[in-house]
Amino acid sequence: LVIAGLGNAILGASGVESVMQIPEELDDPKTAVPKVYNWMLSILLGFGGLVTLTIFFVLDPVELLKGRDFLVSMAGDKSMTGISGSVMLGTLFKTVIVIDAALVLIAATNTSFAGIRGLWVTMAKDHLMPRFFLRTDSKLGTHKNIHIVFLAGIALLAIGANANLEVLGHWYG
Image (cartoon, rainbow, N blue to C red):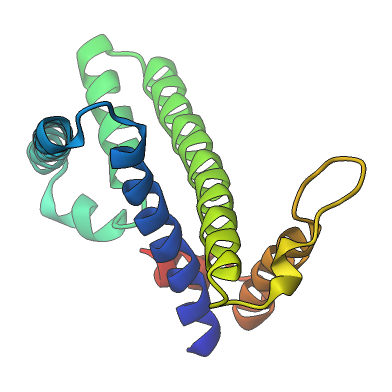
C-alpha cells in the first residue's frame, strides 16, 4: 500500500508541478489562465464524453464487463469491423489504438519524471528536501541524484507489485 502511494504521489506531484508552471509561462496570467483552463476542461470533457458514449453505443453489456480494462480498443475493433466489413481492418485499428495508448503512457511517464524533478529541485532550493538533490553531474549538468531516486521509486513500485502489470494497472487505474 505504501509503495502504491509512492507511485500516486509522484504522479500527483508532477501534475501539480506542471500545472503550476503554466502561469509562469504566460504574459498575462490573470486573463489567460482562466481561458486556458476552460478550453482544456471543455476539450477533455467533450472528447472524454464522446469516447464514453461511443463505447456504450458500440459494446453490449457483456462486452463492457468482459473488456473493462481495454474498452477503447475493443470498441475500435468492433466499430471498424462493422463499418468496413473487414476483420483485418478492425484488428489493425485496434492495434493502432493500443500503440497510441502505449505512446501516451510513455509521454505521461516522461512528464512525471520532468515534473517530479522540477518539484524536488524547487523543494531542495527551499530547504524542504535534502540539498543532496541539487548536486549536478559535471559533464551533463543534470541533477543525477534525482535520477537515481526516481529509478529507485520505479523499482520499488515494480517490486511491490511483483512486476505484475495487472496490479500496477489497478494502482494507477
